[in-house]
Every structure is written in structure tokens, then in C-alpha cells.
Length: 114
Image (cartoon, rainbow, N blue to C red; front, side, top):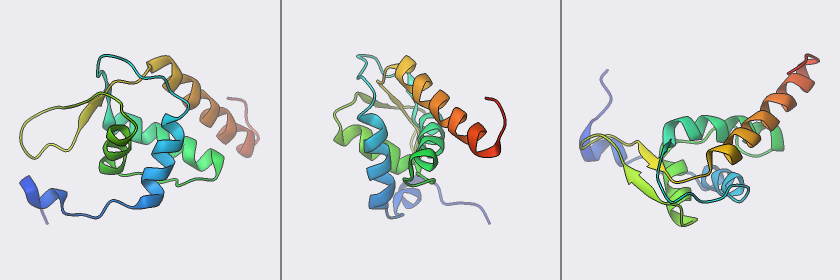
């Protein structure tokens, strides 16, 4: 089955717990004037971070974009019509710091070095 394209692809409901997880992550990040970080890449970082802090371990791309818009980050669409991805103006070093935290947490739970 081929997933829907265009407006039909955006009819799924965005879950509040996923937006809350993304917002909690964004609270630890500074805004950047230029939108350079992919929403899809960021959502995966947020998922790893969320699982390490007891928040949602799954965040949709739409929830990530919605949270960034709500929190006042610069958000720019990428691609053409039907592309759900965006670029977000977020400080990349803050994202890297939180990603490292999540990685260290996962390693500690497994009993291995990060």
C-alpha cells in the first residue's frame, strides 16, 4: 500500500504527549535565526531524549514541527507540496548536548560506555 500524498497525508491526529515531549526538549534549546536543522532528524533526537527522561519515546514529525512553531522557533518548509519536513532554527550545539545526554543514558542502562 502506498501512503497518501498531498493534503491527505496530513490528516493524522497529532498526539498531545508527543508535542509535550518536543516542547520539553525545546525548553533546553536556544533559538537560532536561521532554520538549518531538519525536523525529521530532530524528531529522532527528541525521541531518544524523551525515552531517557521518562517522556514519550515516539514523536511524529508533525508533532515536532507543531511544537517548534508553538514555542516560537523559526520554521521553514522544505521540498515541495506534500513534503511534511521542515527546517528549524535551533542551536545545533544544544541539540548535540541533549543527544549526548540521551546516548550516555542509554549506555548506562545497558552497562556499556558511551
